[in-house]
Length: 161
Ligand code: UDP
Ligand code: MG
Image 1 (cartoon, protein in one colour):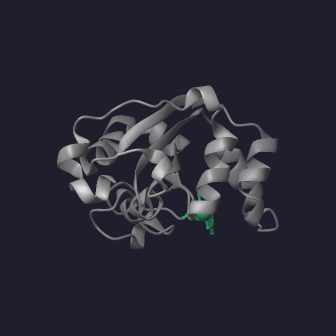
Image 2 (tube, helix red, strand yellow):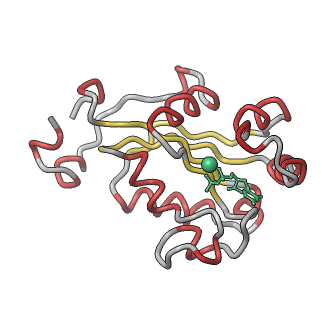
Image 3 (cartoon, protein in one colour):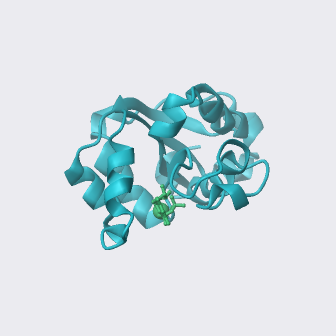
């Protein structure tokens, strides 16, 4: 069950300002808890322009970047770090595609959003980016190690390593 065996990953989720305003923090967090993921980092924070330019570097030249940055600064966000077996991919599936009104029913975006921009959460899109993003939003002492007894029911023994 150790995370240093290399099979367990960590990923970053941000609950975006639209979800904060709409009172969806509990429901969104509950989706990840119900899936069996382990919460290892959690905080509310306000994002400055510099962190947004880094986080959304792949979108800086897009015409919507200014309004995206504005939206992401319109309230604090909730940053979460979730841990689990192949969790980066699992969380992207639970998140649903960017254009929320076409996102699969049952996904968070599919169930809670209609917009391409206001799509309730961010989730890391690859293992490599997840590692960078967790470091971007959390100091090492804000990521917690603890035993989750439920893991023996969430994973088979051979999967836990
Ligand atoms: N976004 C937007 N307009 C677009 C595409 C993206 O406002 O046409 C915003 C939206 O909030 C999205 C974020 O930029 O979630 C990051 O875009 P990306 O393509 O990385 O999508 P994601 O990984 O969030 O699904
Ligand atoms: Mg993305």
